[in-house]
Image (cartoon, rainbow, N blue to C red; front, side, top):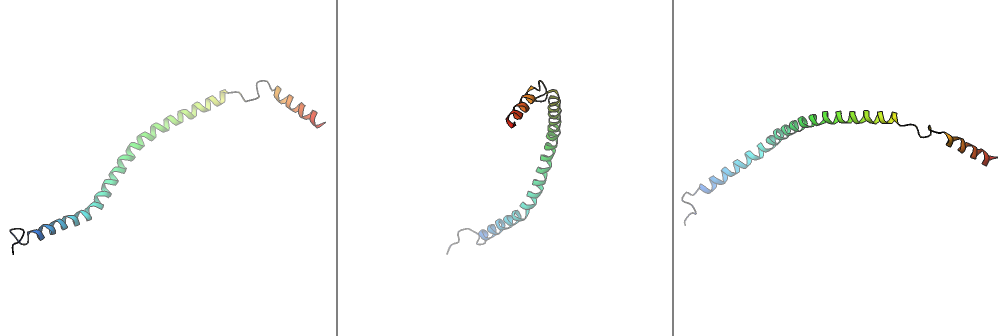
Length: 96
């Protein structure tokens, strides 16, 4: 009976080495993922901090502009006030 390879235990030795390699990956990948994920979050927070400062300045400027425009606009009925008198007279006439 002939063996498929020249050395009888070569296939078993190769499969054993593949199994050891897969076991090492199984143990190492969670550690690599944690380190990589932590690094990614650190880089992401660095860029988010720079963007947040710019957005804070822009939103503060827009809020100040909105407050300025709000003070400049006259109230709804302060120009003539005739609408208040007509409205109260018509109600008094309907009641009597």
